Image (cartoon, rainbow, N blue to C red; front, side, top):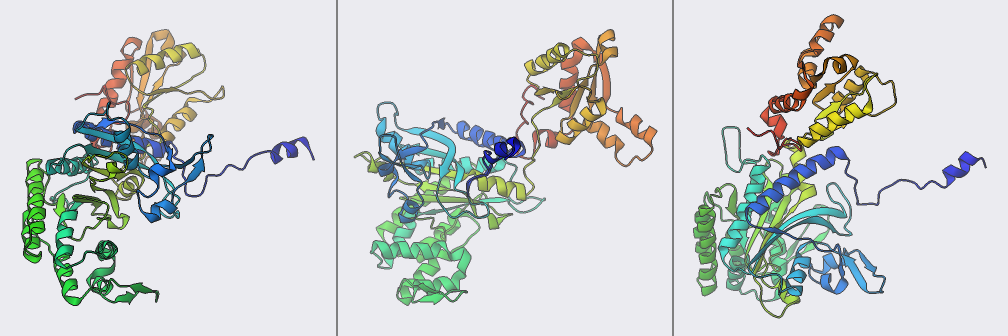
Length: 515
């Protein structure tokens, strides 16, 4: 075996674990923009940042997410041989934190947490074993006004991402937050004489599948069961026909406004104290949403939303992009007043929601709502023959001090200006700073707008005209005026929509370019 063969035999094959993914710069720049928007909206509502360990004691996690989640836990052992697992969501860790630090966390308390979670799920399109959640939760307040603020914050996130929450001349609403209540479902099940916990869960699972299977199949599943398209039997709940019709009447209620939905629901629910309390609570939620200016199309009351209602104790929410319904829910949440009691022997009311960052970004990209630039660099300082590197580094330092992301071209000696400009164009860097021997002698510097030059050259075949067009957007300024010239060029380039990105926040490095 030769030396080279021996060296190669020791190389480790570079590969990613199944169900995990790498994020290259063009991915991370977009992700950072989206996370920045989400964080800004969360903080606008008074939510405070926290973080918790990725690893938890197994007993902390086991049983909190149901039997299926128990099977998906990444389990391991600590150096002290304790059974531990990787967190499958951020909510359980928050409940544990509340119970662990009652002296430091004074209620009411609002937190947000953006971080990775892990589930040993079967990987598939848009489904990974490590993914990022962006959570908000408000603990210590029972008022439905807090639930309304959770919905309003989610609506503001979608709006800030460039999604329309109402119909406009340009088209239909692009996102929708569906809202229902565990209390309304309790009134329905109570009126149908359904008391067994497992039967309740089965009914809720059928309701939750309504959008997929349709009303006829839902009717069959609530009754004796059905056979699916593959020929497999699906066990039915076994309810009597009269009870099935009550359930179907409830989930069939639709109207143009939230209050109209509630009036329709009231008519089909049995007359009882449970019904009165449930409807009054949702009416109060509707009032709060109106006060927060959450539009009727942005947040709709939908009796078909089940969302694992056995876990929740009040309102539940789910958000999707109506322009891409095939991506499913990109946000979900609700009120869960019992989870903290797993760790603390006193009731702590909590309501919140979580955005699935990976699915949201995939949907935004598919909808053409998210730019994917290859770099955050705004200026490339060219390295030309006869110019010392210290002079170039000084230029870069001055631009960076003005919060303008800047690179100095550093590669093999002898790389010509054309190659360096091609490098900048390939990465989408909008401005080049050129300092050659002539500029050094005259105390000037050339600032080249690469976007304008590129547009001017489009479609030109004549070489001389092509070269001349490439000079468009290039100016010479005194060395002392460099930062101001670059700042002004960035402010004008190329348009507000492109400069700020479709997600609606300044591109990194644009902070000083205020209007």
